[in-house]
Image (cartoon, rainbow over all chains, first blue to last red; front, side, top):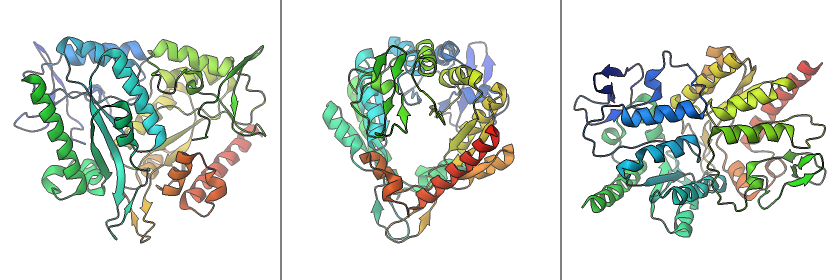
Length: 211
Length: 211
């Protein structure tokens, strides 16, 4: 998505140097993908090895001074989530953003993730409803392919903020597919305004917490 | 999806009795969901506990005589996949069906799953491309929301059968949402013909292998 295939992580005296997305070094990325010899290599790892790597990604990468560290986890409440929460606890993480699609089976998973956050004492910054409606580029009619409103309803029910709906947007998926800069190229798309609203909300939240 | 919320697994002398979808007992289901006290309970389990449960689901459930045992795994190549393949090995499984969405990031995951199958000696029955195009119900124009053709290209590249494309279909998602019988209610939908073609292909494959 960030056009970082074939990029390598380098080792320096103080640890692993992350991969930078741009020359300004405004975004630093670390991923197990960078450590594979070939892009087809399967990471056939049970929990303990994954947990060790997660700890290394936090402790042994020369992150430098960061404004935000964003950890993108798989769905669920298993090894990756437990290890991430445990490893980040000393750094007092701001909280978790839970992302769901609107339909009941997906919302059910996120309900269990809410329970996980409560159990582990991780604050929930809010819920995002992704893949929420599709506006046909040919006739401008909207179809709720994966139902609608499940994320908002869950947020209400759980008493956590609802951060917004991100619609299915072929311009967004195409940008990710081709590693192009969606924010630069499609500032008028529906997903653009949804994503910037969510980002603004989270930035406001972060500045309240740090002040 | 099968309207089995609130159903319980019972214990009998010979093991756990699975949950049956219909009166004919034509489909038996086992899921960790049936073992939770409340539907919101998070299963905060590291690998070893998950692995033990997977083994129990295969060994301790009174499955009876089955035509097919279908194991729906999460994406990836981790504990669940290793344990499932290891536990089923004595029963000589027919193989794996790999499901991807069309875009490059999803196809990349499935490429690694192909490597996993090769490593573990699990035959690949084929690749399905899900969420493959959306035909607007208002204007009948097709939009490839998540790109198109990634699954078919991967199958060609890997030399495994391509089983077909399943389009995004609001009638299918709505049926799953409401626990209704999609096959009975929407026999003319695009997803119906795609899914039945895939099922026929797999049935033919199974009868070749057993004969």
